Length: 162
Image (tube, rainbow, N blue to C red; front, side, top):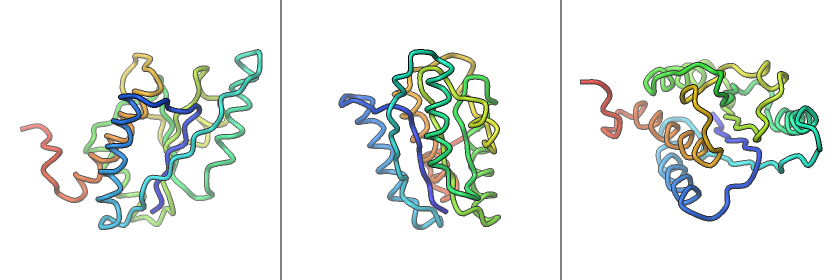
């Protein structure tokens, strides 16, 4: 199953980018043995439209153009539902074992996601109700992908509840 992360905006050099790349490298090292690909990163330019609804629409169209047919889609949204790491691992395994060709995780722009992107999602996911910086969300998404892989591989990184 192909793994992809589509994010609006570029992550600048610095500690967030270093952390994100570190987790991405860890995930990539485990992926093949689990029937998964390395994580393909697509950074989309932020819209320059003057009005927020126009920015959302432009960014939404660009996001939708990146979503392969048949791919499972997770969108990150503060209004989404919280899922445990183990629950996320179960869902990823179900998609993989069910023959889904890919999984794409989407991080929208500063103005959020348009409804057409949310509608395309198989899961609207949140790390909680708080609004988080996009760079930090990218780090957390990549850490969770790595954690999902360690759970699927039976690796001790994820110890879970006692």
